Amino acid sequence: MMLRIKRVPTVVSNYQKEEAEEGASHAAGCGRNCLRSCCLPGAKLPLYAFNKTSKVVCEKDSVGSENDEPPVDFLDSLLLAEWEDRMQRGLFRYDVTACETKVIPGKYGFIAQLNEGRHLKKRPTEFRVDKVLQPFDENKFNFTKVGQEELLFQFEPSKDNVVKFIPKAPIDAENSPSVVAINVSPIEYGHVLLIPRILECLPQRIDRESFLLALYMAVEAGNPYFRLGYNSLGAFATINHLHFQAYYLATPFPIERAPSKKIITTNGGVKISDILNYPVRGLVFEGGNTLEDLSNVVSDSCICLQENNIPYNVLIADTGKRVFLFPQCYAEKQALGEVSSELLDTQVNPAVWEISGHMVLKRKEDYEEASEENAWRLLAEVSLSEARLQEVKELIFETICCNLDENKDVTKTPVQESAVTPPPHEDVDAIRGSHPSMVPV
Image (cartoon, rainbow, N blue to C red):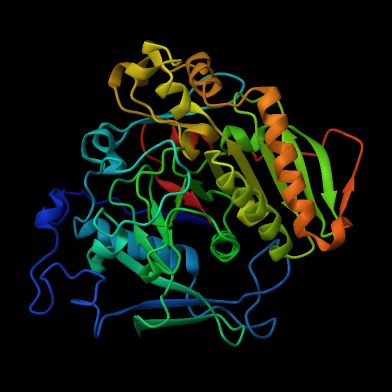
């Protein structure tokens, strides 16, 4: 089935122009309709309660009995509809649907987008880039300062394993909800933020619970063109308040086509492989007897990197069945003066989307001259060396072994080419020239 997207003109709202001017005037609270104690009492927001199954899901979960249907479809009836509503209300800093997009000719199919608005209007980074773990600072921008109109819905596990949708559910400040909000500086259509336990004001660091929540969001979307990404501090996260990003792009990412070689398999069924023939070295995790098996191995790997002050990016793909992990060093190279002025002049900060092959370019000349060679040259600067990556992998595998039962749940296997089936190419033309008019669901 194809979902046809209605296009509407987007204007920049006064709400988004300056933080000091944020928010339409409300009778109660601080006048900004924020998520703090001044405005939160009595606030309501749609609630989507998902079925927290323990299985690795290949298709959409059944709800209740096999014949039951969800009360609202997560993908097009909720997330996209709510996003379109905020688009019509003018809550974005610029019109992302007007951004030019093209597939760069070549073997890898890198995607280039000209997004001048994101460069000009995106909120600046407010913290050090040399420390992956930094304490939350309530004086700096965080998501409790956004207006409630930026929130789309609450995303929580169902207490009775039945998918539920409540159009107007109270926001329970005592049990901090996880929420989905618009990204006011979007990269693509449907660009949202998943903010786990938003009122707990967690810093940007992955934990087991938050990563599992992100995997469940990928499962609920049930769409291979909906991916979630995570950027650590030092790897171009710009806000130190725990969040994942997600959006729709109706074409395979180049990283999803990259071959891989298996390194180890856990007894929980999670296969860990090296990514091959790609400019950024990294690992791919897939499988697992349960979704939690996969989540725990990936989140433990991320925690290991955090604790060793190694910046990293994560891509959740294939409706939660494959996860890519990229330790990176671009900001470090920048600080040491090791990045060429040619690359620095592009002002591209290679975070998860760029690393995955979606090059968000800020200058028209870079977009017009976009080539596979230029994309490769930039991304190669992001990557750890082979020797350094080997050291990082040893840290990760030691952590995984220590976290598994008596070090017996990891089975090393001979290195062999894994069976990677690239996604189909038939949707590539959908994004040539301008923003896609359809999103497969």
